[in-house]
Structures are given as structure tokens and as C-alpha cells.
Length: 395
Image (cartoon, rainbow, N blue to C red; front, side, top):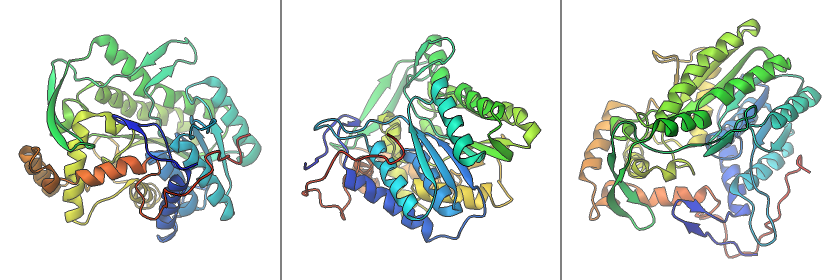
């Protein structure tokens, strides 16, 4: 069938298998053009199908030559309904990895559940024995607790007072302001339960107890800090409280891994267009302006450039360059004073008349649709495609 983008607000309800494969191929080609990374050999990526998780898997496989197990919760095609983009991404990755002689298997299911944790452990024991790197890159709006059964839902709200922020609708390019009411204590508790560090700690404890972690194993989770102009809704809001919990959990996991010489780190990554970030009002205009500034300074990075640089220049370089809180700072280029000064200037000036001149809102729009396999000039979207794509290791 011919697949066209269908969307409502910040959600695209279709995805294109050929476009998703093209996106994966592009990332693989980038990594293969770089120097090999003398690092991880057996890698588990929890949240491996899109964004930073997908790029982490690609960088580990094609940069380090690692065997990878990818875990995700994606939807296969059904009738005339396309699969989710993450499904197509993962199918393409597995196929292309195996063409290069790389081990690649995937598990589709709820990462928060004990059943999927056990299924993952069983696969590691059967095929790899142990893993030396665990990437934790889960972005979910809800979580069912595996012990209590309580269902938690995360919210995007400021804490303490209402917050009025500038935003841009990347479809219409209209700049506006929106006010978000503050979170309740229950909102905060539930958001921390979904996006904090509890599940990461559960994963690492389960892997350690099952004896499937190599001596000196490393685990990395991802966070974002950003500039002051986004803090009210992000870092000082409910998501920020959850990220504080995630970062505090790294130290607890490191203590738990002490007997095997393991370490847990949180990497502060650069702002990029993801399905999650597209729903945050203030982030759309910030990223649109940031893209323009960083491109002008020739320091713009997407997810694959970030993850290759994280593995090659930090994790396996002998110098992690940790900040005062023990975090890996992959946002170092974004947070350069000269970058942020120019971003702040454009931000203050942004209005409906000048938004296309002082920002890269058109590129933001394209990046959003590229998450779903659209807007790639090299892909012929007028051609029929088979939407029923299989993932070889998932029956």
C-alpha cells in the first residue's frame, strides 16, 4: 500500500517502513565512517527502538562490533494499519546487523514487568552468557508496578506555581504562549514512579542476581538538563523531579555493582526532536532556535553523533569527563555560553513574523516526521510498500 503521514497534534499515527529503514541505514553509515571503538562486546539496550536508545544500539553494534539484545514495546502491522516506527526501525536494524555478521536479537514487551526481565535474562544466558554494557533508555507515559500492580501515569507540569511559556506549533509555525497549572504531590509521586530510577535499579539488581553481568560492567541511563529558559516546565517541574531521582539512583546502582567492579552513570544528552520532546510546549521553540544556532556554529549533532561520541570519547576513552555530580555531559556543545547567549537572543525576539528567520522550525517539522520514516528526499513515498514487516528474532 502507499503510506502517507497522518497526524494529530504531536502524534503521527502512521509510519513508513522504507523511510524507517533509510533512517537506520543513514545512522549505520555514519558510524561505519568513524573510527572503531575498542569497547563493549555484549550489550543490552532497554528501550532500543527509537531516539537515543536506537542510536545507542547502532553505535555499539557498528562502532564496537558488539552483539546486541534490544528490548522495546512496539506494535506490528495489523491489517491496513502500519506498524509503529520503532517496529520498523528494529526490523531494519536486525537485518542490517546480521548482514554484517553481528549478533542481534530483540524482545518486544513491557520492560517494567518481571516477565520481560526474566525473558531477557534467559536470552542473555542462552546466547551471550553475560553482558558488559546495559543502556537504559525508557520513555513511557505510564508504568504498572511489577510488585504492587499500581498503575502510574506521568504528567508534564511545573511545581509550586503556574508556568506561562512561549511555544511554537511546528505544523502552522504559529508562536503563542501557554499556561500550565502546577502539579499536585500525587502528580509528582506518579511521575517519579514512571520516569525515575526505580525500574532501572530493578533491572540492574535482577541482572546482577542472575549473574549475567561481566566483571566491570557499565550501565548508562539518559537525562536532560537544558538552559534556564526551559527549567520551569522541565528541570524544575515534574519531569525534572523524576530525573533527579534517576540521577540519585546511579549512585545506588554503583554500590550494588561494587562486588563486580561495575559502575552506573547518567548521561546528560543534547536536546533533540523525539516523540517525547515534541509534546513539551517550551521545547519545540527552544530546539528550533537551538538547531539554527548550532548549525551556524557547525556543532549540530543528532542522536547518532551523540551516542557515537559518548561511547568513543567518554565511556571507552579512559576519560569520562564527569561533572561535579558524576554525570557524563554530552550536552557540552549545546550548553556553551556563546550558543546559549545567541539562543536566548533569538528566543526573546521570536514572534509570528520572524519565527522562520530566527529559528529552524521547518527542520524541526521535518525531524518530527522523520521519526516515523517520512520527509526523506531519497525515499519515493509514491511507491507501494509492504507494511507487514517481520522482525527475524520475534516470532
